Structures are given as C-alpha cells and as structure tokens.
Length: 393
Ligand SMILES: NC(=O)c1ccc[n+]([C@@H]2O[C@H](COP(=O)([O-])OP(=O)(O)OC[C@H]3O[C@@H](n4cnc5c(N)ncnc54)[C@H](OP(=O)(O)O)[C@@H]3O)[C@@H](O)[C@H]2O)c1
Image (cartoon, rainbow, N blue to C red; front, side, top):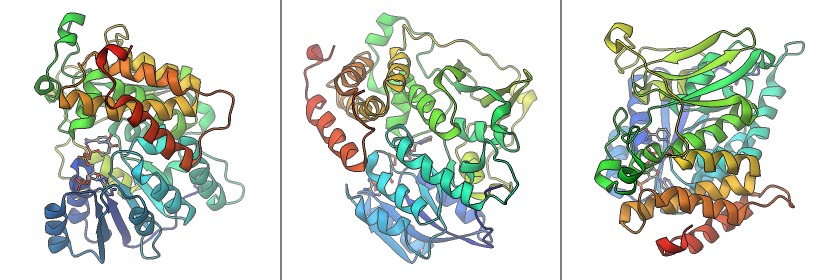
C-alpha cells in the first residue's frame, strides 16, 4: 500500500558507483536487464574505474563529483530517473536524497548519514509520498514509507522484510544483530593495542574500510540503532542489539503476540541491494542461498558496552537528539580516518565520539537543517581532525 507506481523497466541512477556497495549494485542491475535500465553514474574521485564503468555500461550521464553535492542533486532529481541508489559515504548525498524524494523518486540507500544525521528531514518526505499514494480506506502498514526510502543495509533490509504486511501496532521490538567484529572476545588491554590490519579483517563481511572499522568498534551498530528509529518510527527502548557471530540471522522483529520473525541469508550485500530494487517482488540472485544445515549452529549473546563503549555513546547521542546524532556520525568519519592514518588508537575512537557528542548536543533549538548539518560537519572536522589523543577524553 502507498506503493510507487509500477514501472515496467525502472530507470536507475547510482551515486557512488565506484565503491563497495556501488560496484555490487551494478552487478545486480546487470543481472536483471529486463527490469532495470542504468541511466546515470556518479563517483567521487576514482576516474579510471568510472570511465571503465561508463565504457561498459553506457549510461546516458556520468559525473566525477569530487566532494561536490550539486552534481548528485541534479542526477537524483532528473526526469529520466525513477530510482536512485545511494552508495556514497558521508553527508554528500543528503541533498540528493531530499531532492529525489521531493521529486517523487524511489530512493534505495546504503548510506548511513542520510538517516543518522538527516532522518528528521528525510522520513517526513518518504511518509508523505506513502500517504499520498495510499488508496482511500486502506490503513497504513509499518512498511509503507519503505517503499519510497528503501534500506540496503542488511540489518535494516531484514527488519523491512519482517515488517512487510504487518501493521505498526503489531510491532513490539526490533532486534538488530551484530557479528561482534574481529575483537568480540578481546580484553580491554588487547583492544587498546589493536592494529589497523587487525581491525580491517572482518570475520564475516567483505566491506569498505570505514564500515569495517565501524563494525570492529560496534559504532556501526550504534549508528544502525539510530537509523532503525527513523526508518521504522520505533522508540529507542524498543530497539535491541544482539551479538550473532555467524551473521546468518540479519535481524528480527518481535511482535505483540510474542512471536519473532527473522530474516536469514548468506552475508552477501547483493541480496539486500536486490531486494531494495525489486521490492515487492523477489528475483533469482547470484548470492549463495541460505542453508540451515550448513550453518549448523547460530549463537546469540548480549553486547558488552563496557568493552565496546561506542554502542553506549551512540545510544546516548540518540537520546540527546538530532544535533548529537549528527555530531556522532561526522565525528566517526574523523575518528576512523585518524585511526587508519595512525593518529588515534582503536580505543581512542569511542572517546573521540563521546567528546563530539558532548560538545555538540543541543536541546534548546530546533533540529539542524541541511545547511546547519554542513556547518556542523565542517566544525567537527576542524575541531577533531588534529586534536592530540590526550585531549580527546
Ligand atoms: N560496504 C558495505 O558492505 C556496506 C554495508 C552496509 C552499509 N554500507 C554503507 O554504504 C555507504 C557506502 O559504503 P561503501 O563501503 O560502499 O563505501 P566506499 O567503498 O568507500 O565507497 C564510497 C563511494 O562514494 C563515492 N563518493 C564519495 N564522494 C562522492 C561524491 N561527491 N559524489 C559521488 N560519489 C562520491 C566514492 O567514489 P570514489 O571511490 O570514486 O572516490 C565511492 O564510489 C556507507 O554509508 C556505508 O556505511 C556499506
């Protein structure tokens, strides 16, 4: 209900086509030429790969945007685009997402900043589209807005898949699973000595460097709690995190009758990318099928917020509101870049996040608009990019 009109063959733009999600999105699109036509590509700096993609896929338009947001807005709102895949990191695609939704396009997003920093701007547009297209007399479902703003993150895709067909009032609790990363059983002393190479070795997922480090600190799960709040309109006390080292159960929903629905699959991002593109249908996928006998056992444990304080800091930011969550995700980009460059220790990452949240949390003013988010991002970078580790406390 409240669905976008059916398009026989959707015309798709990919923002961030040269990255980890972008390249996998192109694979999914290429596997379904009957359903999708690629019309536009945008990348940041990787000119060689963008040129290769253009030569191979022949989109009508392509742009190497550097740090610029304007070319993405133009592509996302263009008349010949039905669906925009957002696969950039950072805040750079927020304006493009807002422009696409305002123009009535479907947005499929892997990007976290869109929701963690801009959920209060983005979700009203997606809900308005769903409300405007819902047939008279049909009541709303928990998944309506997701037909317009479609999550690609595997956890949010899993929750979405569990919610389809369920009324919002039936939902009691969302359960986000986390692999626990490579240091799930590490002691505080071991965590303090973690090297970049160790942190980049994720046990179950192959991903870009930023999100791999975020998985190791559990900051990623904290950001996902905030995303879940915005996507599903659920309070923070009803969003739980459970460590599940095998990454087979991608997330779950508990309903008011006490039953639990979960979505299971192999850890392969092409699955949630494809679901976001073909929804409400499913289609054959190149990913290996889920196999319970091969999985053999599925373990679950509570997260340890004392050893992984980034999760606690993210929850505190969530409760402090949109200025704090925006500061959190901007600071996380700085912290991870510093860790990768060797100017911050692994256990310094959550300390930097906490310092940023405390500094920028604002309760006395309305939530930040797009311009204010840009200014906040610049200020966080200027403040924390070079601060000596000892000053980050
Ligand atoms: N990787 C995963 O498995 C995964 C899973 C769930 C969620 N996510 C989320 O998805 C997003 C992308 O992650 P990723 O791992 O794919 O990142 P990534 O590999 O670092 O790719 C980022 C992409 O964004 C592009 N980009 C940067 N600035 C741009 C601009 N101004 N205009 C257009 N493109 C620009 C980059 O282009 P250049 O390379 O050309 O500079 C690259 O194509 C992140 O928010 C991440 O948290 C990722």
